[in-house]
Image (cartoon, rainbow, N blue to C red; front, top):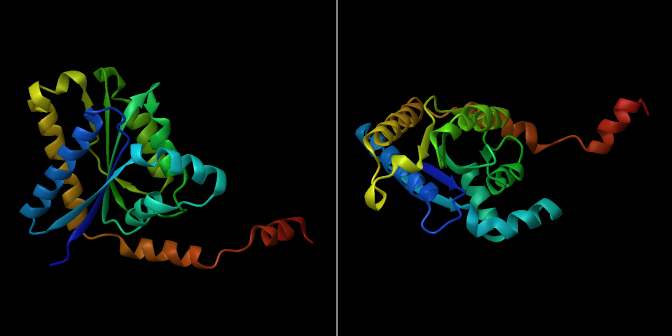
Length: 212
């Protein structure tokens, strides 16, 4: 049986982190939902806190190295991705955005992505729709219809989720499992890879535009 490869990207900064906790709950629920559909899965966790300095270097040099390179490579072969960020200043965190700024073009094209975020109050939940979903639409990912937001009040004692959050996690995980069970859009991935395999040099494009 082919194992589905799931990559979980989270931008939690504190210890302990509600963002990291939500990422764990979502990945576990997704694996359970896949098992109910007769599919095994393997999870790779990308903790952006560990790659903060490498991300800054990559922005300056254009080349990712070490653990960050491994994380980007894992994302490139993922069957599905779960992304979780804390809400900072009414949007995703800068660390979270920087990671997706350094992706190769087309890397997430056609890949199912489950969106999630954490924040102090439920008033921040609209960030999922006005900031995160448009960004992944730009990246040509296939976003899961249900996005999950967890406010501070959604966590009970010892990190236990309240009934409402647990229900949202289960619904979103089931939707992601359904997208995977319906078949990964391999054709789109292959098309993107073919388009990027032999790109036209930028100098040539400028020469064509100027008529020289």
